[in-house]
Length: 94
Image 1 (cartoon, rainbow, N blue to C red):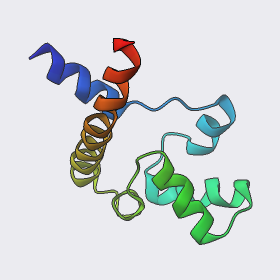
Image 2: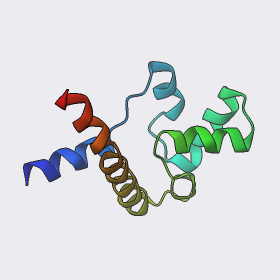
Image 3: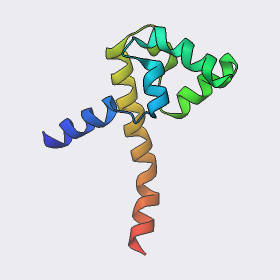
């Protein structure tokens, strides 16, 4: 059970710089993502790629669909862990 709690906590938390945290300002993603993109000065496609590179689902964020967002993020993080296991085991076995 503790492992499940840790995984949930990790999925729900993302480190933000002070500047980004001020842009987010406690609002829903559908509101602050537009400001983040404008501040970054990137195209829609580039911004989507940036979000995806952080294991985020833009479609769920823009819809403020937190349940689908967290479920999807958990699944993708677990997939990355499974994919990395052989590399990690090889690294630590010598």
